[in-house]
Image 1 (cartoon, rainbow, N blue to C red):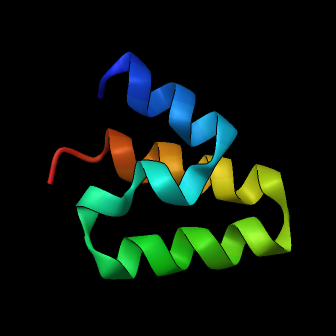
Image 2 (tube, helix red, strand yellow):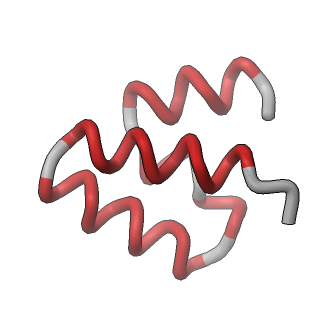
Image 3 (cartoon, rainbow, N blue to C red):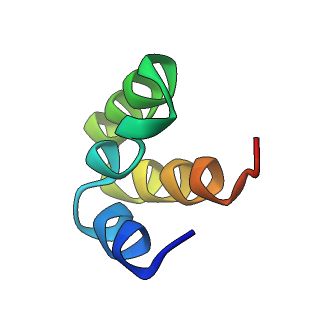
Length: 51
């Protein structure tokens, strides 16, 4: 997980997980619409997952 991805996950979470697949992008996007904090948490969890 690079520093740029972490910074991007904090600023705009859906954009940081766009390389992980469409499902991850949609989940993080919906959580970001519900609130910024859930979107950031989900993005950091997805980025931290090695799979």
